[in-house]
Image (tube, rainbow, N blue to C red):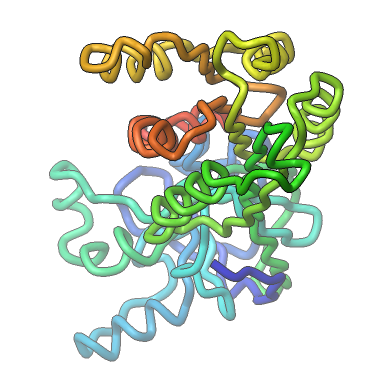
Length: 315
């Protein structure tokens, strides 16, 4: 998904003392680490602030012939000029000194909410609102300019192969990982940015590359090759020594699943873990392994991303 910095403005700021009710406009709001001071949604969680575009409210009014106003959809900040339909998690909004980070797209309304919402939030809140948490507090009032800063979700794919790096062998597993990941993210609201790198089976080169990527806050790092027991198979050893946390269950599950039919699959020393804020997966160097591993990894991938960034999707 293409991304660029955009600007908009604040139309209204709105608060309520109880959850599940419409919010009323106020002159200004004060934000701290818990959200909006005095608002019902304030607290140490990821849905501190709700935002909705005035364009969505106007479109809804035209559709049903209604006269809903700012705050009627329980949004804290009513905006103009920002298309939240293209928003992604971890995108940021700069409003003066205030910095917000988007942590949820839309919200399903539970049964307990319908009495208060009637049908007001039925058509907009689940699809067109976004929720955010406060990264830096301050004051927001109507008329403030909004600078929208999309998060580039960076994904690096490293192929380790002496022959491929020398041009003697065509790298097939790296492109296959890219193909699977592009398909996985195609229907998801992430601003993805992919890059493939080929290096020889060299400990120093791999370590330096991982250090650079993790220092650059690359979101996802996949390696392919070097997970066996041969003299040049060093990938799990280097990655494992650099990880702050290991996630053994993912690769153990894959080994058991495919090892039941092919015992050779149990030889793989593939690992998964976290280096700083980067998720790292080491895959064997074959297209067959990629076809087996990526679908299993994909099952927990988004949840791991949320956890890594402190986003509890169950709240």
